Amino acid sequence: MTDVEKRVRRLGPLKLGIVALALVALVVPVVAVMAASPDPSTTAPASSAAASPKASASGDVKRDDAKPEKNDKNNKNDGGRGSLKGFGGFGGFGVGRGGVTITAIDGAKVSLKTADGWTRTITVTAETTITKGGQAIKIGDLDVGDAVAFRQKRNDDGTYSIVAIVVPTPKAAGEVTAVTASSLTIKGRGDTTRTITLNGSTAYQLGKAKGAKSDVKVGSRVVVEGTVSGETFTALTVHVALSTASGEVTAKSSDSITLKRRDGKTTVIHLSSKTQISVRGKAAATVADIAVGDRAEAAGTTRADGSLDALRLHGRAPRTNDSRKAPAASTTPG
Image 1 (tube, rainbow, N blue to C red):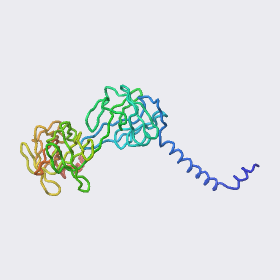
Image 2 (tube, helix red, strand yellow; image 1 turned 90 degrees about the horizontal axis):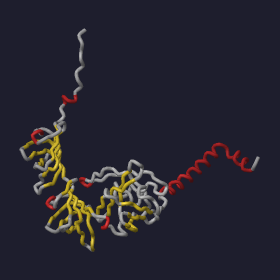
Image 3 (tube, helix red, strand yellow; image 1 turned 90 degrees about the vertical axis):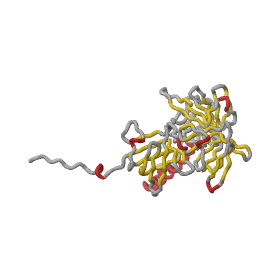
Image 4 (cartoon, helix red, strand yellow; image 1 turned 180 degrees about the vertical axis):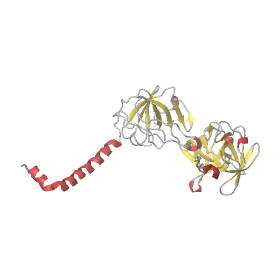
């Protein structure tokens, strides 16, 4: 019997189990560290990569998450969980650390890298959208050194195509407290205020739809994407969040309804040709299909008097106790 065999026999089954658990505890952290950062690759094909995209829910300033998918050994989980949700390759998760920056642009090919050595070259196609600060730009507007995020889709043959590239820009968010011809002032956290410069190139987004400067009103909640030079923040795009109101319909006319909210207060909802009206159970609806006593929810922009210009209005009849009752048991003659 060898010395090793003698030592194993002295340990016994219980001590052997403890040793085995200790070895497993040592192995697991090593595996986790190895999986944390993908192997750098300078030759990864443009079709390999990151996340399978979901449809974006960008209206009302919401964004979706995208789950990372496994890929070839040189591009493990190549993107998909960045701080810019729905886009891979930004924020330091899944594609290395330090964010993704452009290192070279050669025609339709854009080379990327992170601070820890991850690299990849992606190909821009006619289907690729490129945006900066919420506005569409062209590949010629990209510069070496730009931080970017990208989104892609899986093709039927298993390859990936780049769907979108985003150049993140500084953002400011809060409630609008003042609007002038060339600026707006917003109040953020801690009641801090900031003045945003507006110009002829500033774009406006109202919920999911294209908006206008007139949609920015005192009381509106906005997210502004723009550029910063010194103390000046110039808006590229102003995203105006929709205000909402819901409650019981207490009055109606051809162009408005009044809602009684849970707090007992009322809100007047103004309707126009732009208002999309829907009613539960009806394929096509008008305000005539919404009756006093019904429940309704509206989304739109708030006027100075607190009333709402509705872009969307949804109505539904209130539930009744009768509708919840179980049907009476049937009887058959004996």
